[in-house]
Figure 1 (tube, helix red, strand yellow):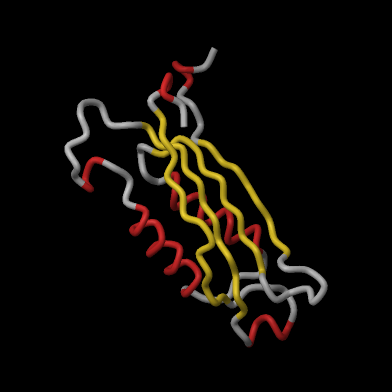
Figure 2 (tube, rainbow, N blue to C red; figure 1 turned 180 degrees about the horizontal axis):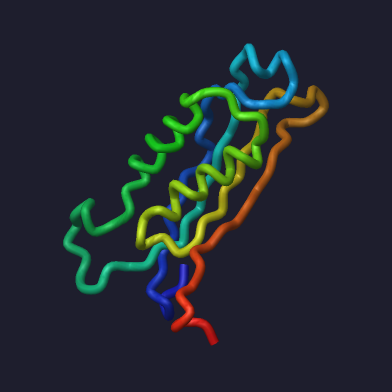
Length: 130
């Protein structure tokens, strides 16, 4: 969060879904648990907050979009899923940046999880650069 820039954070922690994800043959046939975390830097609305959902970023909409991505079919790489989630999040005009972490929870018997974390931000218009 950054009061000087009028930015707040919206996050979803530890969203657990069953996904067809992975490059190995057995991963193409059987869903496996994944944990998804997102953290979005969101521009605040101008004016007073009037306790209306329409004035803020609705994280339930984001979760539904992530569920749709996971349900759409097999994905080879956690990196690909992370990029797809980031694109969905950045589609909202108010979102400046997003951090996405995808963890496969049952891939390595010796580890609690394995995965990837990415951070993406919107490109700044040329007139703002400098």
